[in-house]
Length: 319
Image (cartoon, rainbow, N blue to C red; front, side):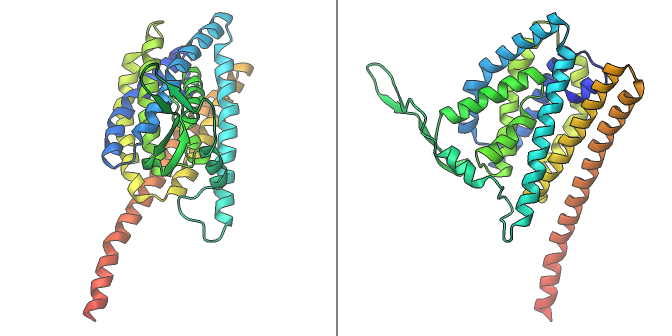
């Protein structure tokens, strides 16, 4: 959606079409990650309980902004503030974990805080079904390495992510993954897969709601989906070769590029200067292309190292 805003697509149409795009691109990838065991479907189902009503509420809020004539500036400003906060935290975490000696590859700087969140005791502690049974509101999530957590935590996360996704048209992807990693303490690879599962639900609900007000351009979404599918397949394969810390840092750089691009677009709209809009487009495409090149290079290096290691080992045995 940020890219659509940068390229001048009307705000609500950008949000609706963006949700359609991420829904389509995430379905196949969710299945692929599911086969790899990287999707926590139990966690995803809990978050969906909060996500669906939140997306509906966000669409109503956006429609009111549109009626007031402020949807464009509001969406762009919220984008910039949120992305700036997010990238600051991601890069800070990368810097902090790198300073620690002996830090494990998938460890983040908020590991102790994540354990505190997992141990939260939030009432009600059980839900009674009249005449039947009383069910506890605590579940284990073995796929996410969580022994026990209150269901109200993922439901609350789902509501917050769903509202922001419905407001910004981001599908919750760039919002949810950092929360799963840094707040809930979920392994990075599982966070990626579970995030995609949640995006499918968010995108589906958002597409339905925004299409009812004619704010979805299906042709635009299909064209972008055709090209996005290539990058998505690269992303699935990349999780096997690229280290978790590298995924987080590259993700931070991508978010930073999007943040600056949307900010430049808002400056262009406010000042009426086309130069900033052009610069925003160049920056957005340049960062995306650079990240793809970096990931592809890292994958090739890792694959080559895997091929040469057995060769050296057999050579040593022969000698």
